[in-house]
Length: 76
Image (tube, rainbow, N blue to C red; front, side, top):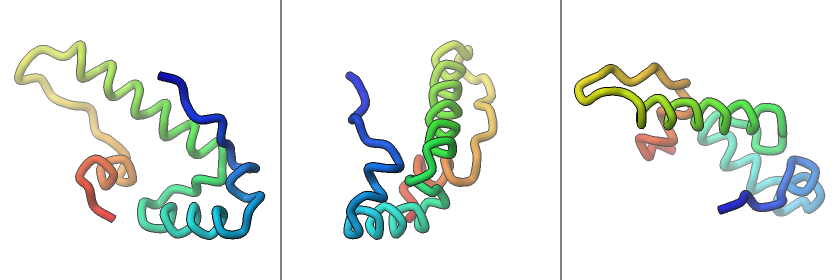
């Protein structure tokens, strides 16, 4: 499944979308209008998933960023 063709410029283009993206970002500690920050977050998540898939049962999971941990734990 591919990603939606949405980037920071798209999110900033409409005031309502921009404010919603900023509100959501404030809850999770991520500026979703910052393409570099979102790319880094997605890259970190992909690496964590790949590591998780390769680790033996009972192995240790690598430490995640506080923002990603909050997303995974369902905290807003």
